Image (cartoon, rainbow, N blue to C red):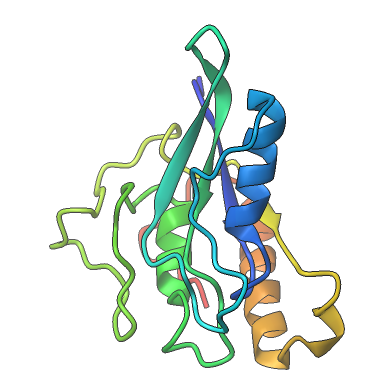
Length: 168
């Protein structure tokens, strides 16, 4: 049984993934918050690590869902979040606080690698965050990367997958 629904925010750099989380948190808290730092002026990722956000209720308990905010997808794969890291996040193999590396995806030797992920560690909901005013300007490579993630997630249907599962 899953105790907390995990929601992954996925999208291009500058689409508003962190701002989306902050907006949801603002509504639930009934006040302005900025738990996820955001930068709308840059064309590079501001979020550099995998960050899990639990949302607190007014009675200090938590809502039964949490958001995972990650580095954005960029046209050149070696600048944004690595596709293999996205696959590992979906499967629950990347722990909170993992700092994304431009050149290489996470390895099993990394202390932030979770080799024994459970159903609670896996992503249960994938949310694509896109900027409505920039969608017509999106690079085709970013669109293709997002499409591949969506297709793999749909095919997987959140069930167990073989160890040799190829992502992209």
